[in-house]
Length: 314
Length: 297
Image 1 (tube, one colour):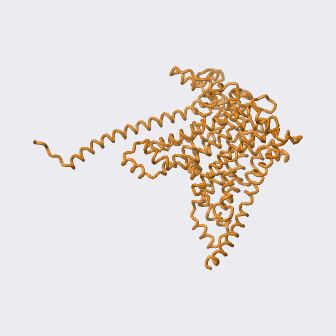
Image 2 (image 1 turned 180 degrees about the horizontal axis):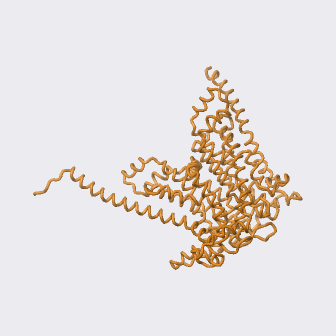
Image 3 (image 1 turned 90 degrees about the horizontal axis):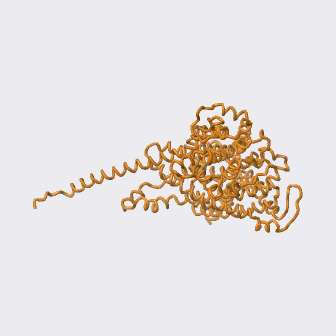
């Protein structure tokens, strides 16, 4: 009886709050409908058509069949996978190491944090051009520096084998955001846990594995997953590096093939951009878009599971 | 048998003193090692900026050589960047894009985040999952249909397709604000309700003053995102030099305006400088804001 008399007004209150929420959320929900749901459905629709912005022709599964025979899909997917498998872990580990170092500093910690953080704010275009200059084999300072030690530096952005590692260096330089996130996580680990571990005779490595790692695991996972998803979208730096290193501009009509050198920097989003907005084969571009969507959804679901486990959603 | 008797206490004392000495020496060594490593890394992080600056000040002839130090300081390079390119126009376009998008984002995202964090309603969980999904969606996935809509409206070739959507909220900003608003105890809003505040008044009078750091962080992030954005303007901005943004213009600067690196580096420095200045003006907001982006998992 009491449950009933309690339940009813409560439910009415909840419903009223639901109505208020709907009013407050209406603009955003409209945005989701226009910029997320509609284009996603539309992408599926176009993927079964040939479309060049003028004529629309139903072609069934042709676009999907072509996907299997497009050599550039294999190249660009492999390049994107490389970024996910090498660049992301390298950046995350480096940021964590850097954070570990900075939280241990007694003198000038603020100054060092600023120095390590600042490059992450540098615009992608500016940072990429800077690294193409630094690493250029003719007049660049980096290979001159290596020469001091008798090392002949490679052609970095001009060599298909070294172009992705060059971008990885750029990514390490811009790891400041991640470093600050990890610093906050490290400083949140209760000090007494380390003291207890030290009394138990745990060395630095053991302390890291048994105390630090479990404590920062959620933040680490979150960073890893979000950075994998960002790597799937990786576009600007790769495209700018290709352009500046090859010296070709990309105004519509010019013959710029993305991915210089030898398509080693051609990522999946770049190929999609080329197919859709330079060649105007938009139906096929939608197939590539769905491929990218599937890949990113896998990791988004991982992220959502993380949130659920952390009790974030209640 | 004339052994001196040492009390346990003495043993302990001398032992701990020796141990203390060793520990202190070890700690000092560790101190030197960590700080030396930090200095070395800091130099490597700063080196690119130093080389941009030095190259930006070289004469045309010298920029073709592998010299690292300018013989004569060509300050005129910076003026030449302005003469040769439409840098001021680019800056104006970028500023307009970033300012309007930031303004719209804050105005639209704060109420949305407030509703997600405060109201109890069915579908609240689903709404949050939708925010995260939208936040993580690669922009390229939905680019084709959205582009076609803007083309039909005749707005391609302008930056409006990048600005107008922010009127309906930005997923990343909503996410960040929601995370922050959840940390504000319910008691405040309940008290406001008891005092007869409407939802809007509660948001403006109670929540917003407390959420100032988060709002500032969201505004700064959005501004920087737009200021640095390359993909969006590449898709939508016009193709004339006067239509470009800073990132677009800079990316084609070397091919269009300069054979040597010196002018390109001067332009790079000019594009980066405002970002650095803003950072130093609002350093705390940045660091606190970034910390917020990493919360929870």
